[in-house]
Length: 284
Image (cartoon, rainbow, N blue to C red):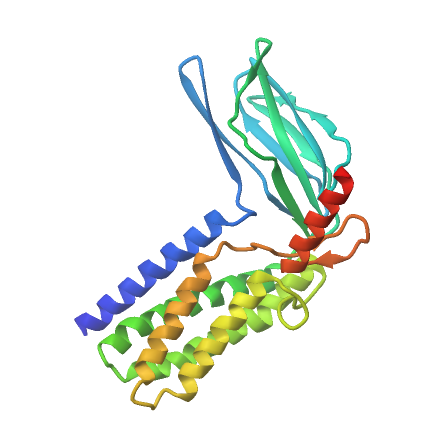
């Protein structure tokens, strides 16, 4: 009994840690800044994702001595930069980035000054923010919860299979059911509300998020059908390791992106090719 509890505690701890890592390293996670002024450290974050039909609010908590502006343009383009001046609202400098169609992106950077002196923020590249449609809670919440349970159950298989406990075979089936519900039913629904498309992975596109979920499903289906073989538990462990590897890939990497010229949504390797092509073409 004590060993089972330990296995589940380890599974939960590992799963939550790796999911937090995936979310924090993804391209839609807020970008953090830290600056020092007159001996005091100030921290703030700038958005890289926004949902709904409203403009994206930007709020920066800084002393009154600070002023600033945001320069932005559509991404990926070489259009001229537009400027948004930050306005003072109490202890905050505020503005709002203009809303874009689902999967549309803006690139922008912040410029701050105090007492006529420009503040160095250490940026080496512009921030890219992706816009999306509003996703209803009845779709988003089950999707997130089911994917969390999928990873926890998948990770538990490693420990039960290593201990040669027969229960790992049942857990393979539970993991597949959770993955199908979270990744292939509620996942596409969430994506439809966010970007207007149900599935942009293989064979219809190259969306990395969709494809990595598909790889995990294939790994677990193989483990399920061969679970009674002498090497079945090693296939189960391998499938669970594939799941963990999938979650080490940052969330939303190479995700949907609106082509500002055609109005079409592009993904994955197609996205990278078109982005690079457009940037090279615009420079020439």
